[in-house]
Length: 294
Image 1 (cartoon, helix red, strand yellow):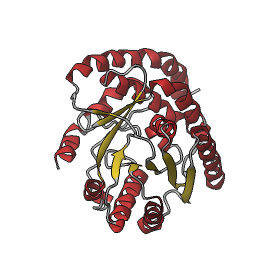
Image 2 (cartoon, helix red, strand yellow; image 1 turned 60 degrees about the vertical axis):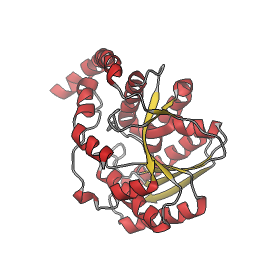
Image 3 (spheres, rainbow, N blue to C red; image 1 turned 180 degrees about the vertical axis):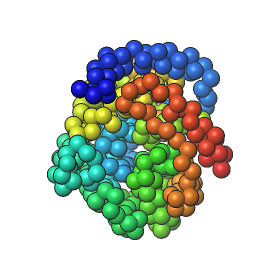
Image 4 (spheres, rainbow, N blue to C red; image 1 turned 60 degrees about the horizontal axis):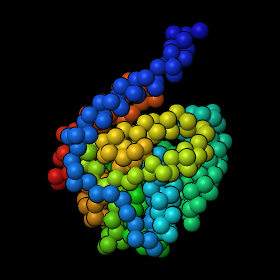
């Protein structure tokens, strides 16, 4: 048995204790958090589009908020850009893509979505134009009031590429009244840049049921639970919270229309084991400040 294999049960046993230490720190840091952050509300009757680079990003980033929108009578469409075939949970990429589509369908049913749009481009093998065109058509059809989106505050090249394609699509339709809400996937927005928070504490069991639907992505999903707990502590919320960076669509276009190769690789995400969680909040702090001010 390798050293890494012997270490796994030790890490599993100690993960909760390590997280507890960090949660004490996040609770203390809450006193330094900006208090001008807005709380999520919906008047109902909104048209909502959620753009997910992979099947599971919509759940990791904003499952609780999606459920809140559905409860409020909003019409929610989730568009999944790629098929996730490069995940290594199943060796055969075609079978992996089929599995992830099944998981996305199960998650959509649990969220009671009005519509799941499976764009399903082959992960790692698609052009920006191949996504830009269907996203533009979808935006023109739905005319969303709110778009939940990935962003530059990330490290995954596919997330970058989807954010870029979305920005170009919004630019083509002339980005009028749409509001874009950037969500976090492993890389936290942090209070430096987050300006909207949703209290999803009452929906924890339903959120967890949706996240469990992504059986093949259990490792990635595990970080989402900790991130929600940290966000709740930072904003004085009971159990779980989801943070967003809301902006006019025109600003999202300005931030993301430049090709991703020109974006700084400045951020770090939460890892499966919580030992280095605070680094995900500290690394890239200056880059977040620059984006907030630009």
